[in-house]
Amino acid sequence: MVEQKLPLPPFSLEDAIIKIQKAEDAWNSKNPEKISKAYSVDSEWRNRDTFVKGREQIVDFLTEKWEKELNYTLKKEYWAHTDNRIAVRFEYEYQNKEGKWFRAYGNENWEFDENGLMKKRFASINDLSISENERKFS
Image (cartoon, rainbow, N blue to C red; front, side):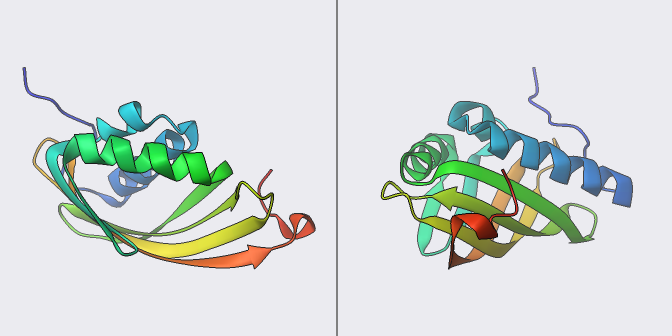
């Protein structure tokens, strides 16, 4: 049985927006195993200065991420798309173990295989220290 994640490419605008919302919902679940299933088994990532390859490394990366980034909340926004690629802008907030709040801003470029699994994810991210009363997300 072939593993698929709908919608499948080529993406319409509506498909791209659905794919983005599904990604946002999955990441906000903070469930690394569930999230990894949206990626191809050989998926390649660049996340800041970290390079990740394959689902096992994705699970490890996300597990470590949410051990450090507490109270994480993410919002993704459509930027552009083509047949099998989607670009998003995003921001998320998190609190470190010392209780300090941050907002991260960034862009992601996604490439999908024919089964709708993400095979490439390239993320550029900048963090901004914020006070608790500057939070947008609760």
